[in-house]
Image (cartoon, rainbow, N blue to C red; front, side, top):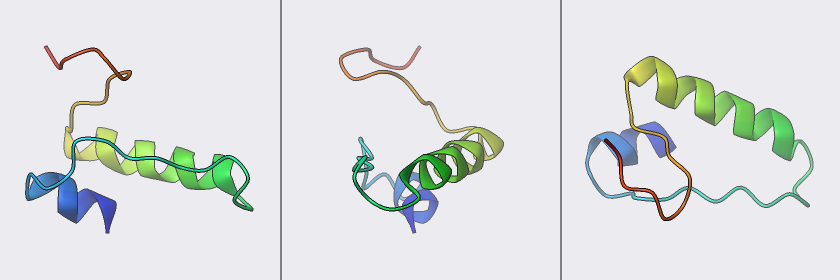
Length: 49
C-alpha cells in the first residue's frame, strides 16, 4: 500500500498512530520497505536532498 502510493507520487507523508497495536513493528516495516525502494525519508519540515 504505502510504497505503491509513494512510487506513484501520491504521498508526501506517512503517519503511523502510536496507539495502534504493533505500531513500532508497522513503522519499522514501512521504513525498511521505503529504504529498500530508495525512497527519500526525512523528518517533517525538511525537504529531501
